[in-house]
View 1 (cartoon, each protein chain N blue to C red):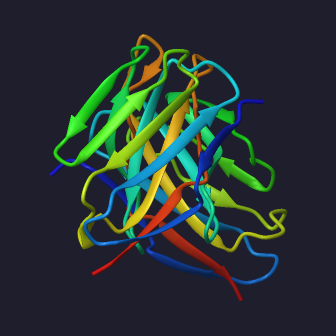
View 2: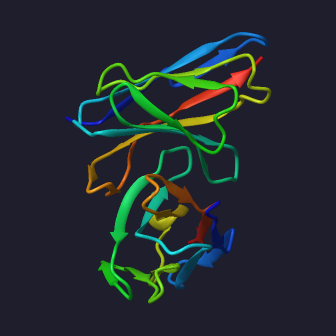
Length: 110
Length: 115
């Protein structure tokens, strides 16, 4: 079945450093979504990418969807302590359901 | 405010006991989902439903059952056949347009512990 691999599993950064998490699917995706889960909380939808090569920005966050629609990345510029949490990608196919990556847990040292 | 309500927040189950987790949404979303999250891991799909009175198994359906009698409600029963039920259970809903999901809205989750 469909697999979505996400790396790295953990990332520790100093406040102000940049952070990137990568997501790779074994199959071509219809779209990909990114979520953030704060410690003790539930996932919250951040963004969806649909088009091949698409790039979207939300303040310090930049999301990319690969040309082959099989990979994606989330980049945070100049991390802040409020960025702490686990970031998940979810790849969606026409089968009607998404497959989540295992997430990247970001810790930020002040 | 619109959203998804899961209850209870914490649930303790004895060995051999069935328990039901509640999930209600007032977003008028077509599709609803149940995910299981274990510590340090991602979300694994248990069951999902795209329309009332119809649902499909996800990747880890064994030991679980669901019903979708109303658009707003999608309860999950964890049966005694589920050998390792201790986990964080998340309910989600989404709009479906042209068969595509445009992002999940999650409830705040139920933490189930076997005692």
